[in-house]
Length: 402
Image (cartoon, rainbow, N blue to C red):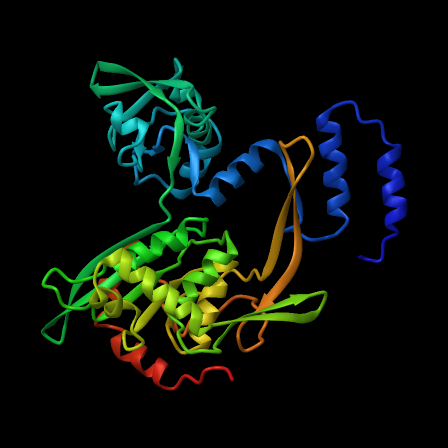
């Protein structure tokens, strides 16, 4: 491994006097750095806790986030405020307030201006520090001072608890195309957690236009999705690639292709049965999952890892047209091994993967380059009808892997 004598590395580690956990963690980080792999690292307690929350699709907090209220701030000022206290007065407001979450039940709402957290003025805190303060141990409380109006304030005591983090967002968007209305299903996956596949099934099962007609197209938005739980991403891909024996991904261990994931008829039957149960209507299942529905998949430079696997699988199997900018380019797979203290963990690269065509993922180049698309569902209006013709032509000349 890397041409190093790991017996000597082991002796070096064992000879060190480690008086604190900080000493231990520093030594372990030094050892892992010798592998020269940026994705193999030590997750310290705070990072490991955040990682587990992301993977589980839940967190301990008040069910709300914070942001700078002035959206017109420059990128530089936003970055400075995120990681350091502000020297100028600025408002911090609540955002992403979850339905049914502790913050909403306590009477807080989107846009509330936070003046202090646990009696500490937000003007002396960075945005990250404020966000971290909203999280903590289960059943503990955090006190927020909210500005209701100039000179008027109100205190809220909110109990932290485990809240579900939604990773899938969906909606039907009606667009005009050649003087005809098109019903386009918009499906955004922000990250791959253990709940993403289940959330996607529920969203797909519920897609049906208001007038009861099937949708005309599907837009899958994986922009800024940096990856996560690989199995959920693979199961998501299987929802759209139905052909028996279709290759979805190749796994490479120590330089050799060790296995390929393919679609099976058994899974197709189970998947369709689940969709029927969730939607209560076979028409809803057929409206989106049907092979006849064109799919546009949005990516950008922050689309990485498991999301790139999804994009490559749908593209190579002629199931979707990729629109956006070149993706990040990460094709390695990590496994997390918890240390005996239960507070930290190793994150170790165990394999890599290639596209169904056997190509390495060094950044997926989109079929149609588009760096001007707005965020969220607003992108749909820019894609249809402007790119509708290009989408159809790209799919018509596609040749699936054999």
